[in-house]
Length: 267
Image (cartoon, rainbow, N blue to C red; front, side, top):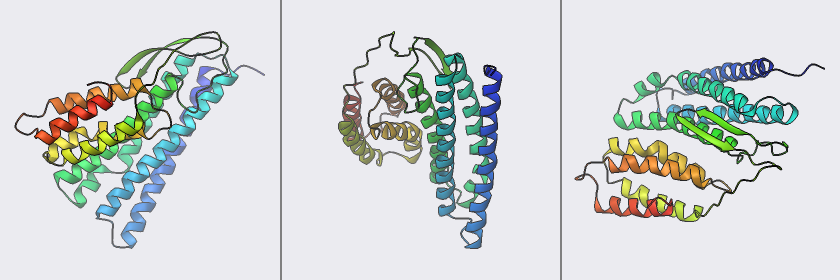
């Protein structure tokens, strides 16, 4: 039997992604039809259901493609970094397609306001945040789908969104040490306190921090969080928080920031 090629892999992944996009388009139309039949099309419920559908269906596609990538890597000698990079590109393209298919402009027209715009933007951004985290976890060998039986070590140069990273994969013939000292429970408590303090800020400032906060909550809820990923998200959030004008940063917010930075190990 001839060995599979990179092009064979790409054909399979593209086919799966295109099928998922077609199925998602049908699901969105069905949702809108169902909501219209109830007289609820132009409602907050439709916005929420659309964002929930986007998150669930795109996460399912991510699971499917990473599982197929892991299967391919475990059964072939194709280059790991090349396949992961190609998979990332296809997922990024599908993310844009999925996001467009929920018709954000239509959803915004249901209840024009800055708060609704922020909710829709945060919902779409969270999909991209989760995708980046999943790809980073796969690269670091932390994803559930990551194969661990390869008998060789490889250093990956992987372009994931705007992040470049050199990652040595842990195998039988290589060693890699990762010490996780962050406390997920402490991070959750600090995030709760941060949310309370955040309520005292203008809506426009809160919206800027939502993508990073969503990503942090997702990490804190995982059985084993990635210290490097959590710290990178924390630094991104801190950069946004530090950009808030001094007169808007309430004492409660400043205190909550200090507590969260400490919990994230960046204080």
